[in-house]
Amino acid sequence: MFCPNCDYEYRSGAVCPRCKVDTVIFDRTAGISDRLYNKGLAKAKISDITGAIECLRKSIKFNKNNIAAHNLIGLCYYEIGYVGEALKHWVVSNSKLKEQNRASYYIDEASKNGKVIEKLDNAVAMYNQALEYIKAENDDMAVIQLKKAVEASPRFVDAHNLLAFCSLIQGDTEKAVTSIEKALSVDVNNPVALNYYNELFQNKKRPEPVANFAGPAQAAKPAAAEQEAAQAAFKPITVDERKRMFDSFPIGEILAFAIGCVVIAILMITLYTPSRVDTKNDEIDKLQKELDTLSEEYAENKTDLEKLISEAETGLSAMETENEQLRSRVAAQDLRERVNSAANLVADENYLAAAEELSIIDLNEMPADLVERINELKVIVWPKVVALCFENGRESYESAEFDAAYSSLQKSLLYMTQESEIAPNIYYYLGLTAEKLEDFAGASEYYIIVMDDYPNSNQFNLAKTRYDQINQE
Image 1 (tube, rainbow, N blue to C red):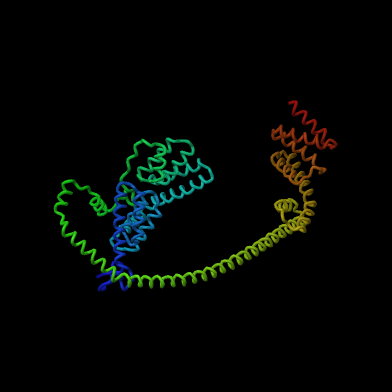
Image 2 (cartoon, rainbow, N blue to C red):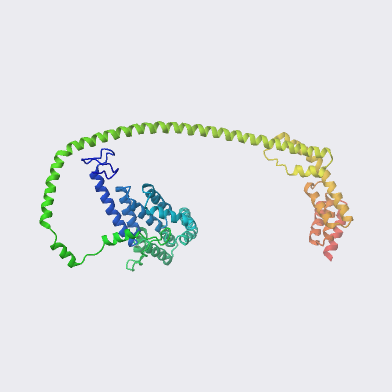
């Protein structure tokens, strides 16, 4: 006989000598897995995707090597918009059986439709973002994300359900019902959608399901062989066929055979069970020892790993501190170079360039000695620049270059203090220049500054005369 797990040929016994698998239990679990697969296939054919996934999960639990169950549950997940789960099952299936496996076809078709997969992945991402918005009580943004998700993946059942939930929160029952019906048209027994539907409409007719998959390459339907098997498994039997089958059924022979099987089973249990129990106990003890050894190794490895992580974090913290100190030193050095550059410009009597250099230096968190030096340079430079800009502005005004004059005079204001002796002259000439540029409102403002802030200056009467003339006109 052959072992159903590893195909090893041996003479007799319930336990395979090579892989130590109980072949009786293995056959039973494989049979249960196949029945659950058939049940899941039947549910998938009527668009009961939730029920199909539940049956197929159980089928895979009983037999992890059930290729057909992996393939079909992948199609079910793809149908409701979960591409990642679908690909996971197809990859597992393909790893277990390389040849003549439809999983490779599904994977190839999915890879060919990269844009479609990207849209479905984006739909899941938008669904997750909508969940975050709902947690933050931002229903409007959640609705926007969910509408985009169902537009990208129209059969995304969970997105339809969540959109229905948001519509109910906002009191829009009509939109909620539309979303619920779309979810039920894809998955007829989806528990969330059913709960919403039954709460809202107890007597309303359920929407008709859309009885086809939307697989990777096309509307993904189960394989032809799977469809025929499901149809045969659930084909109704007529009354005449049932009677004919009953009349021709060899009841007596089968009853005798069944009694013989029972007697043999009792003898086998009586003779074989004690030794089998001892074997199982030995296996349990062996596995327990292996588990204890693995637990000890895990604890040791965990301690070593935690120690390495702690050391790495300490080293990282030290490096960050050192980097910060290095950045501070580099910044301080850069500031010193800027200050030295400004000092050199002052020494060369290039006051305009020195002023520009000093004005862009940030005094925040600067060493005290540099702040003091910068202030000393400003005391020297600022009056020089104000006087120079004023002279340039007045010369440009007298040369009828009014735009240049206005620019130079405005620049002098950047470095001028209100207590400067030259301040009334600057404001007066700004007023004159503004008049020439036909900015009479601006000119009036400059004259008012001269009259209000510098009443004892020589420009007071001149500014008042110009102001009165402008306002009379």
